[in-house]
Structures are given as C-alpha cells and as structure tokens.
Image (cartoon, rainbow, N blue to C red; front, side):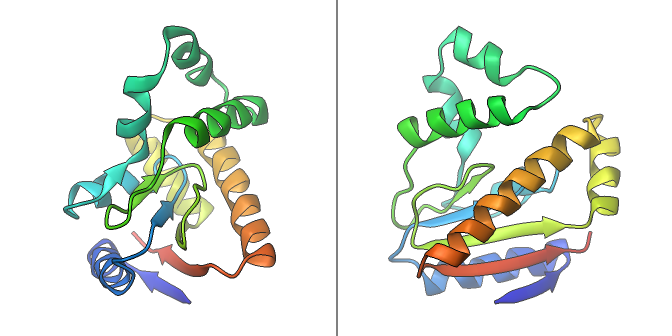
Length: 158
C-alpha cells in the first residue's frame, strides 16, 4: 500500500498501521534525516534502533560505524551488528536504518530534493544520506520480491 503523507498524516498513518498490526513485529525503515526520530518521539510505545543499539557497542564498533563518508562496507558492518544485537518485540515498532526481521515493514521515503533540504537543516552530508537511502531501497525491493510480509510505503512530503 502506498500513501503520500505530510508529517501529521504520517503520524496518523503509522498509528493506524501499528493498531492494525499490534500483534506483529513492525520495522519502520527510513534513511538518515528523513524524520524517523522526530516521528518516533511522537508515537508512544515505539523504539529507536540507535537507542537499542548504541549502548551495546564497543568503542571500536562505534568508531567504525561513525566514519565518514558512509560506505557499503560500513553499512554491511552496521547491518551485521544490528541483526545480532537488536530485535523487534511485538507491540513495540522499531524505527530503523536497517531492515530487521518483522512481519510488517513500513518504508518512509522522500524525494532527493526533500532529503537534501533535511540534510542541510541538520548539517548532515546529503551524499551519505542518499547512499543509505539507496541501500534501504535495495533491501526493501529485495524483501518485497522474495517475501509474503505486509509492506507499506509512505512517501513523505514535508
């Protein structure tokens, strides 16, 4: 199911999805600077992947993940750590850069133009966010082709 949404509409759409699938594990995917943390903070009972992962990292793991610019190798390393250390619990949707094992997957997408605008506001590198977005889209498309999970696509408009 695909839906174009503003921030307020996104929150409403996510709440409806979470209610409909309250007895399933839900992974909400989105790139850096797409607004995951802002949305997650406004929806009680949700989890931020970073908050679940960072306390479990060693100093070396954290240093490797934080390298700039972002590369596929860093992404692969991060994905491995996340899959080892973070799990989704039923009734606690997780907002993540990494596709985790779940029955329901929600993709928060936004145009490259809007992503560039968000990155500029945050002082983040657009190319890093775009590279992460491309990796997420590959994982999303691969899952959709090979799986019978429930997928929602939310196209963010602000």
